[in-house]
Amino acid sequence: MRRAQSLMLMAALIAAAAGARAQDGAPGTPRGELFGGYSYFRAGDAGTGLNGGDFSIAENVNRWFGGALDLSSHHGSFAGSGVNVTTIAYGPVFSYRRDPRFTPFFHVLLGAVRGSSGYLGISLPDTEFAITGGGGVDVKLGKHLAVRVIQADYISSHFLSKTQNNFRLSAGLVFRFGFRR
Image (tube, rainbow, N blue to C red; front, side):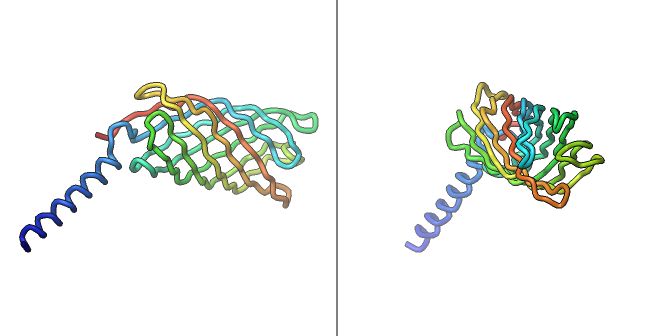
């Protein structure tokens, strides 16, 4: 009787370990993802809209957790002068991969925002700390390709001793590579 209980316990532990391994390394979970696409940046409380691009590279540690490096650049005009804003940030990404066709995700990124002269009234180019929080949804087109239908981010910056509440919307293609077996 004691031997049967030990065998059942061992079988349950092996099954749990195998299930966890299958979940973290299930086929269809890419090790990395490269995103690139169009992006719209609403700059600060001034409501200035800038157009540009958003690019990121992400490493998936397992099926639900990873890290991403995000870079975006936006151009337009503010108060009659041409301006640009560049962001760079890194942080954790949390993905929900229950349905292989859709991958919703959420991220919190820390980094910097660089505004050119004229951006929000600054006289010289300046770089400030930024916190980015947001997420989006990827829709699978094939094993190595998905479309990021939307990514919406709130980006907090602090120019001219004031906090700016910036918003960014992005959409584009996601290239997936290095799938786990």
